Image (cartoon, rainbow, N blue to C red; front, side, top):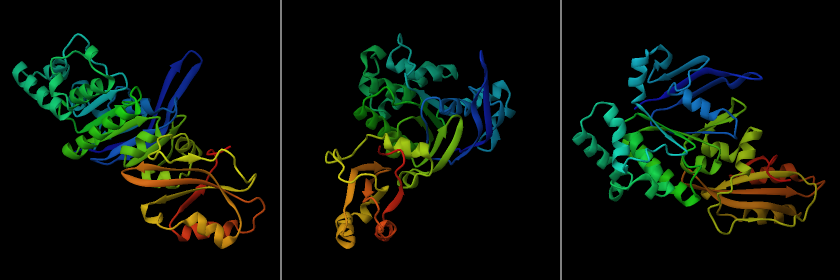
Length: 344
């Protein structure tokens, strides 16, 4: 197994209008065997960062270390060998359209010098792992998007990598297919102990499969931590915005208030887990303090396999009980945070 350490990485590009700073002093540590998400909106620098992890882009400054070894110290030959330990899958699959599914998976093995019988045997084993044993002789044009991505995953696993980089690997897929691909990545992580880095702009992907996450904006990392902690109590505005835009509700009973009853009161976000969901907390809050509380939004989401409920609450304008009501909620195990960026 292997871990990734990124130290003060900067990346600049020359453009017609001058220099573009794609990455600004980025530092991250990704532990061996983790599933680590890197999320941000378009232009945040996340794809540039993941390409620096295998030196497809060479950092302008800083170091990228794999298993304690700096990629910048390698010769071209050594770097090519090191990349065998780093698999990569992409949004648009990058399959060879004129080759069969089996031959697509064999391709990196041929490059490494394996003979055809051994390569085809290994490719068949990998296609079984990704659930495509019956598609060995099919061609990419005959496959669905999810099947194409499974072929790409099998191909990325062909060299027995220690690290798998996924650059927007589910962005071209529908939600149901995305979930099946994420489940496959989790299974691969558990079965082989491969470190997986997922680049995405979708918070639903991060909360479903990742253990840790780094949130990027304009080439900088603005927040890092456990996915469960950031979902419960995001510190940065961009994290709150990404969570707000996460439409992946896990219940059909999720609802959004369409006619708020209270205007201009303080708005907060609360998060509760299974352990804090046994008491009708909001009802008891209203009964205790004898004043209305407006539920602007409520839903339940899967965060790393744990059900997390989220509510956006609005207190009555001019209420003198707001701090006491917050304390009431905290005493019952609910996480409380700002709702800036969640509701208008």
